[in-house]
Length: 597
Image (cartoon, rainbow, N blue to C red; front, side):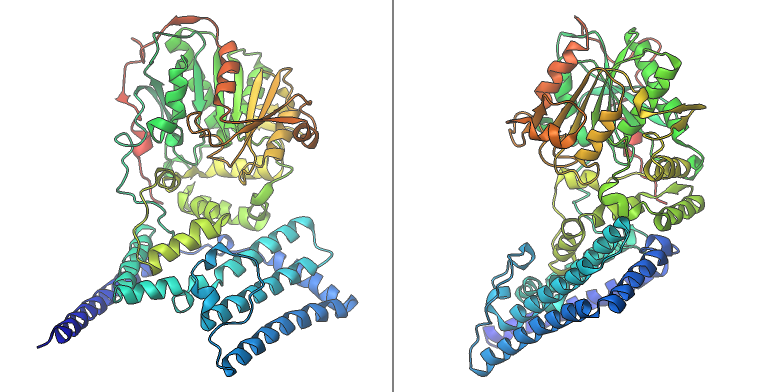
């Protein structure tokens, strides 16, 4: 038997083994899908109102301006047929080269075959022509409510991105090349990855973005030294071990968002905001929120303010013996910190000396990209889901955030994982992104209805613990950091909320980059700069026009400001005291809890 014959037999055996594995994996996938949670149609797409309003606007266009509609259709069909004829002429002339491709560069089509191979180039250009046709048709519709237009554009873009030829095996040259090179092994591994994700999400599909086995919280991520010194049903309070002989007298407490884990501020030593703050000589406390289950169904924003914020502030005062603390709120935790500050102002309570807001919204008149999900069809569906589950599951929130950046967080990872058979990368930021938590049902609806939809805090007032509070009642000295490309808390919307606060002393900083990278931006990397301005915090356009750009992180600028609010230096404080014994080492126990709904 020749070597060539032996290779053929080995290849045949490998193919048979792969086919057997595919059969087994298919059975597992069918079984997982059979146990899928009941689908909530209201969370799978927009309600009928959007279809009706869009159809009515289109019908009006057809009746009043038929030539406009016909022109758009003729333009699309003309481009598609012209390209088809050019491709046919090239082939009939014996040319292997495809026709000219005038379209803009698209990172999805990096493989040279998209430009050089007639088959792939034809598919790509036809897709691009069709995508432009859909986009042009949407843009041409008049007499649409601005929110309906935003939603129509968003969901049309989702359909366009979904139908990209890169998302299908038969039209993805990278996946086909890999399948041939590996004799089908890449497809089997891809199916294994697909089945793993479906099983992990109880029949639903959520792409795993990072290697979950590469990180362990408290071992190689979230490792700053500290101790849990207080615990209740909503949070653990972590006091971090000092690294300087003396510290500022006034302690600092950080309230992170409870949609994700707090260790985004302590991913690894070189980019840890927590370690950096401690190294600057501040006594630092960080709240680690509980991951709620069904028993937390009736926990609302009132409970977060009373059992969370007010309790944590009181515990820090007791442990340090100080009458005042400085506070930081990040994202939704900054929104709730502002509610707490307005309430304390009503009560004439001076416990907060200064406040810092990271990417915080308090005025929701501009809902940004989230507007597509903050209309009644989706919020009604969320409310029904919360009543059924007791919480808003992390699954729905992760999926929503991913669809805001679907190319980067859904389709590209899915292609690599399911078609190329690649393992998820060992990337700490993506690991944290996938480590999301549930929200108590009542709290989620309080936030979505009263703050996001009705904008009561920036309007007539939002009720907190029996008091009606407004954003103008936030009066402590403050600094706010927003991020230039933040798609979750747009910087202009953040600015407008800060502008409405009643504080006499306000400082606003605009960091480069987005919601995470603009905040977790250590000085050592010198990666993103920031803007400051002497213009009044009133008009964002004027403020930005008069702003000065500074190279590097905003952290040192904030530290200098915070130091002036933190009093004289005193001997460093070890975590806890006689009344607050150490309950666990940082990062605590709550941060490691997984609660599946």
